Image 1 (cartoon, rainbow, N blue to C red):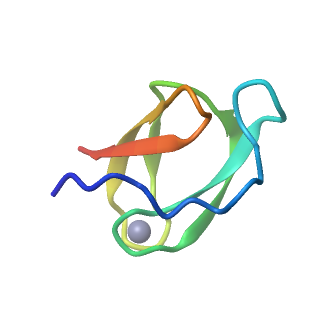
Image 2: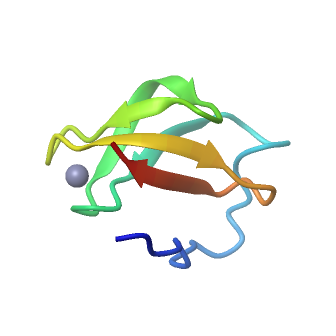
Length: 69
Ligand SMILES: [Zn+2]
């Protein structure tokens, strides 16, 4: 399973040059997970709801991409 996250949320414009990203939407169960630490490129995150682990990368447009671990 390797779908692109095309489900973007319009022109929210967070990430990269903007403010730190401190939440993510789980690609498996769609739950919104707040994080204590800002999400940075290459970090590993766990969904609090389904328990899946993901390696996160941030692309040029500041969007999060998830790779299931
Ligand atoms: Zn989940």
